[in-house]
Image (cartoon, rainbow, N blue to C red; front, side, top):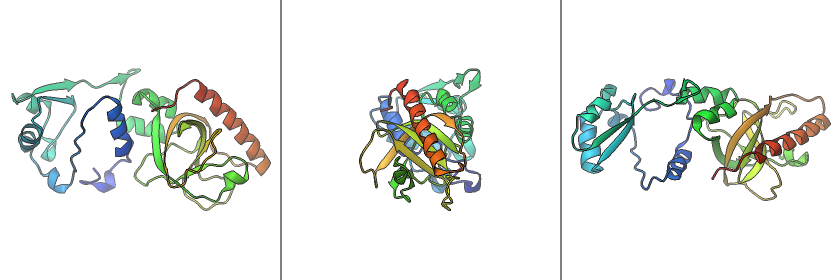
Length: 249
């Protein structure tokens, strides 16, 4: 959709770098990535089968979901693949969790609403978010709780505003997503991760955050002291939540 109709393209749920690592964790030995552009979009389904699957990849088995479509105007489907004797076609039925069909659009909606624990049921693991750590205004450090600041990419799904328990860099973390209403910072949405019991420099590094649970919504406090007290409670709650899980690889 980002190529064919950019204005209607949904936000990316799993960026390539994360998707690549998840696929690697499944034991896949080789990953072939085909760049999709307007020229590629004009390929007929039969041409894709003959040129890519048969000639270039020499595929012996092809697995697709039952609602899979490919080729120009999405004319290719599982039945077309099954009609080719050069390879075996395996059609995977749609997956359901608690009576609901697992779909990226549904998961995207859950994450945007802050329901990351519910989204994890459909993802079969925590929602993962990663960005480069950038310099902020060091407000967290001044309050005794330094944070790694991550600026979301415009096309990436971000959890709804609030405070979350998460894993980051192998450490339990309390993560704030929002615009920090207690301070007039003039910033857009920011993801601020306080890595508990971590002392180090992460600037310029890519930090991957595994969101576990939304602990509370975003709130404006009447004083900095009230904010610091609440942050202390958030850290303790995040530790409790993380202690019941293991950090993702």
